[in-house]
Amino acid sequence: MVEEEAWNAYPYTKTRYTCPFVEKFYLEIETYYFPDNGHQDNVFKLSSSDLRNRIVDVIDVVKDQLHGADYVKEEDPLYYVSEKSGRGPLTQNWLEEYWEEVKGKQQPLPNGKALMCAYKLCKVEFRYWGMQTKIERFIHDTG
Image 1 (cartoon, rainbow, N blue to C red):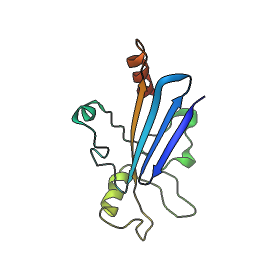
Image 2: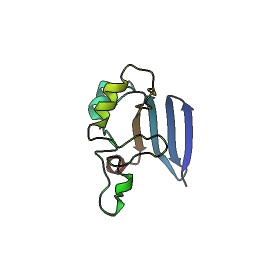
Image 3: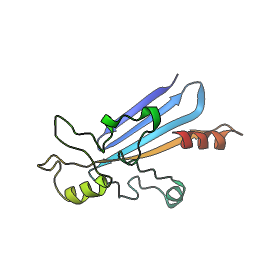
């Protein structure tokens, strides 16, 4: 059994997962939403030590494609065009192109373009002697 607590104060949210049977464990995800391309370096105001130890993983819906049986060409952002909005397909450099177009402007633009980045900070703690480092690293690597 996993318990979830969530706080939503947009543009900031925080979600914490705990397990009553594993008292010294939690997984916490903080999120900030900004109308930008992900260029901000320290939205969570981390200490210099935490900044050095963090891993930044930029997710790009065009460049981070599915492979094999999970890939569906009709859902590929390089080919997909929305019937409702007419937007799409995206280009390989869509993120930079969108940012240049929307930077400093009220979004969405009259043409419907908008850009938002969800900055996520994931923390995990597993305070059991002899297993803490290995379990925390495993969760970070697979999460």
